[in-house]
Length: 202
Length: 202
Image 1 (tube, helix red, strand yellow):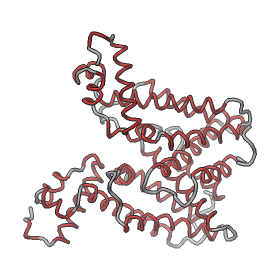
Image 2 (cartoon, rainbow over the protein chains, first blue to last red; image 1 turned 90 degrees about the horizontal axis):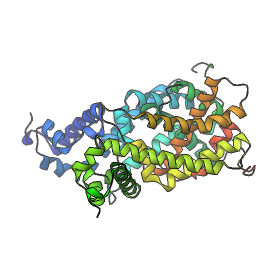
Image 3 (cartoon, rainbow over the protein chains, first blue to last red; image 1 turned 120 degrees about the vertical axis):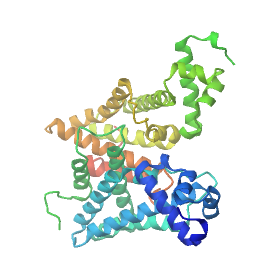
Image 4 (cartoon, rainbow over the protein chains, first blue to last red; image 1 turned 60 degrees about the horizontal axis):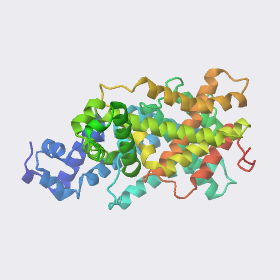
C-alpha cells in the first residue's frame, strides 16, 4: 500500500474517488464507509477528511463520475442518429440500460441524501443540467413550433417516465415482472413522442 | 410509559408499528431505530425482537400501512368518477399528491431494502398487486379490445411515469423546478391515455 508521502493531494483525491467508485459499483452506497476507503487507499481516515469535508463530499464526487459516465454512453449511442425521435428513444433506452446493468452505482445517485445543512457543489448542478439538455435538443427539432417552456415540460415528462421505469425495473418491490421493461419503454416513447420501435435505428 | 405486563402480544405489535409509523412519517427511514421505537413504547429492544425478526420486519409493516393508506386515498378520490380516463388521471394525481405531501413515509417504501436472505411476507405482495390493479380496471374499460398483456403493459407504463415524476419532484437532485409537476403529469396522461385536463373532474 502507498504511503502518505507518495502522493500529491490531487493524486490522493483521484485515488480515493476511484476506490470509492469501485466500492459503490460493487456493494452500493450501503457498502461505503470512510474507514473502508481509507484502508484500501493505505491512508488514515483522518487523511480522508483533510480532502473531503465529510463522506457526503466523497459520495457526491462518485455520483458525479456516474453521471459523467452515463452522459458519455448516451453521447456515444447518439452518434450517427439524425432523426430526433430516434435520438430521444436512444437516450431513453441507453438510460434504462445503464440503470439496469449498473444498478448499484446508478441507485447511489438517487439514494444519496445530503445532510440538511449541506449543498451540492456548482459543478454537480451543471452536470445534471447537461444531462437534461441532451433530451431537450432533439425535442426542439421534433417540435419546432413549441415554446421553450413546452419543450422543457415535455423533456421532464420523458425523463420522469424513463426514470420511473428504471426505478421499478431495478427495485425489487414494484418490479413489473409481468411485462418487459423495454416494451413498456417503447409504449411510453410511442405515446409521448410518436416513436416507432420498428422504424430502424437511424 | 406502559409496562410489559400491560399489553397482549397483539396490542404490543400494534403499538410498536404505530410508533414506528410516526417516526418514519416525521424523520424518514433514517430516523428509525429499534432502540428509539422500544424506548418510546416503554419496552426493551429485546422485547421488540420477540415480535419482529429484525428491524426490516417492522419497516415492512410500516410500509404496508403506507401502501394501505395510499390505496384508501385513491379509492376515496375515485368515488363518483365514472369515465375511465378521468379515473386513471385521478389515481395518478392522488399518487403524486400523496408522494409530495407525505414524502418521508412514501420514500421509505422505496428506500427500504431487505437483507439479501430475507423476503417480503405474502400479504405485502398482495397489497402491491392490489395497488397495481386499481389502474388496470379503468384501463380495461378504456381499451375493451386490448389483450390482458397489453393492458398490463400500459398500466405499468402509467405507474412508472407517475412514479418517476413523483421521485423527481420529491428528490432534491433532478428536481424539475422549471416546470410544475402537475403540468408534467397532465402532459403524460394526455399523451398516454388521451386525458384532457380541461375536461372537468367526472
